[in-house]
Image (cartoon, rainbow, N blue to C red; front, side, top):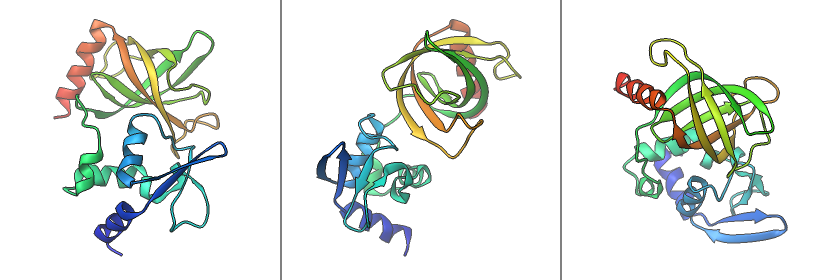
Length: 195
């Protein structure tokens, strides 16, 4: 089956969400994409559609894989309009970070960054959307020569197959609340250097 046929079938499918014992739906595929982006639906939520044998974790369903969603964003398909447009360019990176939430200290990596947020792989599975954390981006190399600190809010967490060790397995999307001036300058420089 071609990608276009699969996309057409997915968009016609009615999807349902399980929250506790309550079932919600039906929803269009584009509505679920919007819920994922706004933090209303996570990889660990169960969903079902008529073509599935049973309820499954959203993160385990091919139609919602990161690769599939990335291809839809790039396509000229009518679904590309379902995605929230980023206000700032985002780049892939590999920056070591330390973070704390006033209770625990943990380490990890920043895997992508923009002027207003980042995607982090952290050694702490217990952070929740809405929590504030302090992140120290460690200095290294020419793009990030000196470290800087950021106050951020966790806006989403997603399961990932990428791991730092047995404790990690979650990507945290964070929105920057405060960034040190030197950090703002370094992030802009990193983005300019990748264009």
